[in-house]
Length: 438
Image (cartoon, rainbow, N blue to C red; front, side):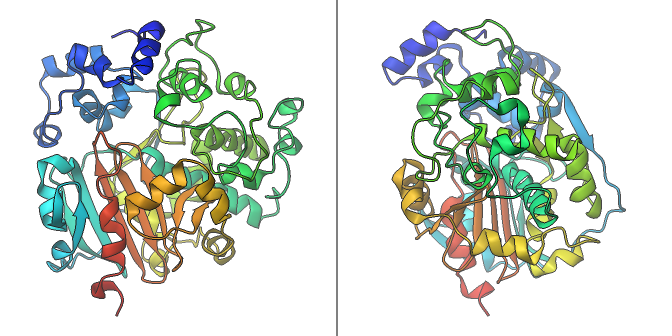
């Protein structure tokens, strides 16, 4: 289905974006077991025909297909394992599956929620002290690669932390200080820390409305990544071109406004400072030190082949788990190098952004309610930092990365859900249960 700006605008006016998908059947929601069963050649061809930026947002059949087939839909940088496989010991604990949370479908145990067709959970894993204690794959094979969504953003955050540790960038320096071609733009005088905290103050906020507004900068960025022409210029734009159109709305640092545009601005900065591609840096500095479970797939923008690190990353679930383990005391069980320094972990957990700024926009209150617990703030490409220092990052359509350094606990999951966050309600009940607080 081709992108139709007039239709999108009309649908937005009536608050009926789902009608777009319903018109051609793309919002049909087959059970996630469909991804587990596989696709016929005819189904592949139909999904290729229907796939596009707008359909990828719906959480229906096209999304379900795309989330485990991103490397067939995008140019992709492949990071292959550098080390022999070294599976973690597995000691499954049935008590984990009995932990309960209040969900949209009532009070359910984790086991019942994961297997409930309405949850759209495809895979769920809990690691504690270097051992896998819970692992289920109701909607994909364990060997399938699945889209990380925005759980990929902390990769960008970690690379920045490393450059800060090395004195190659100053978090209180300005964007224009490191990006000469952005001097004279609205980015020039914004501190890097404000961009890391998604408080740039620019008109780049990502919301349900902006994701479907063909004139918004987030949509223009996403269209370029999908290789689709901009509705205004009728051309496939570059990331740099789109970013330079940003305008100031409020003072930087005063309000958390979730934005993948901010993350991509940081991708450009990292590449500028190091003179290396992001995929090479991620391999050199993070993934080459781990015994990867299959490949890491970093998908590239169709407009300029920049790694779309705000969310277009795929792998098996265990790679997401091992990335999370880098922030825990068990890092040395999966890595030959401590890639998350004590100083970086302290900055993430303790030098937390303002709670007032976090709650000033629309995202902070929504994130807090979804997790059903008090959140201090977002911080440095993580969505939520809790008073006990735990960290959470949500991905679009319901991927999750939860890290509790003090408990030596990591929770990860994949899903394809229209409501973006089906597993969130279990994060704090799992972490705070007696199983992991002994």
